[in-house]
Length: 363
Ligand SMILES: [Zn+2]
Image 1 (cartoon, rainbow, N blue to C red):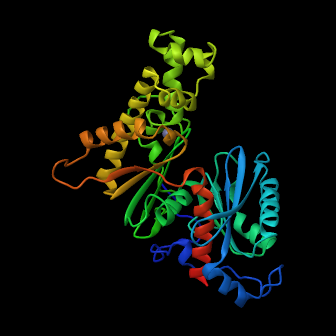
Image 2: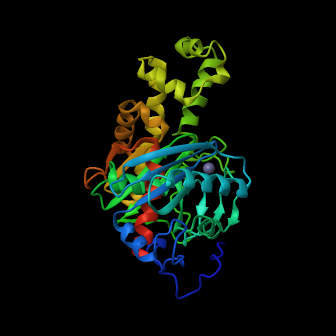
Image 3: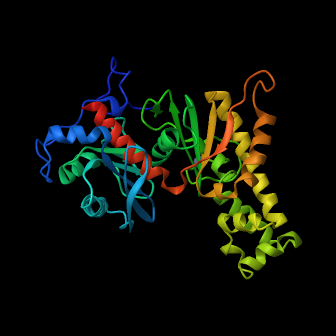
């Protein structure tokens, strides 16, 4: 059974989203000498820094109110020590903030944040466990800070500036090594009761199927992700299948070196077996989207992440499988399925914008 997070009691179930909450106390004068009143004025059209913390790299950028990136910086993720990650964040903000007047900082990372956007409950790539990251960072950066899940940040960016603009019920799916998911409903990131909604990749789509790192078997991300594409291609190559000769040649015979990205490149170059493998992944993608449509009834699915470079080779079979499996097909409008528009920077753009919008609303 789920335990409610600390501080949540009966009678406070309808808690506002973190970006509708009271602001954290801001210093009257920031380190750059901006007064609090000037800070508020800047916030309306001001710049924010977005930081996307991945398993291997930390990407940061200064983002304006129209979602444009004005300057960027990158670092490698410094191991899993929370203090070292904080130091890198401070370094990046100092470096990028030198040429701009920065209003707020948004941090996106894989993992679960509490509904306040103040504490990281769990992050798979980093050692954050119940880490009060926002408090630490606001003290160091002297600016409003918002923590957000990376898939939520990317969905927000696509809704504000990308392929999801104008949609009142948007579901975003990020296809990378696994599947990330997020929803923007009526202009608000929907995070569920405990802040952990959107784990669509772990819907069980094939009971008893492939083992997933979450511990279950048959999760959707074991069938419709870059990892799934690579795994199936390696099986073909190891069997020395006559249809896999181009795949085998692309890695000089080392089947273990085949990745989803290699298969995608070969498919784009016209290799028939790679196209068939992508077709299969697209099929699984469409089936899972039909399940989500049955539960959530969105107007649009935006598909982002590395696997999207396959374009129509992935999305067309997904659309077909979606139409075949949609509950009530023929008697209901069907959601659209489109590719994301913002590419790999969606996470940092969304984190920056959420921090700017939320701190403005809270002020
Ligand atoms: Zn799983």
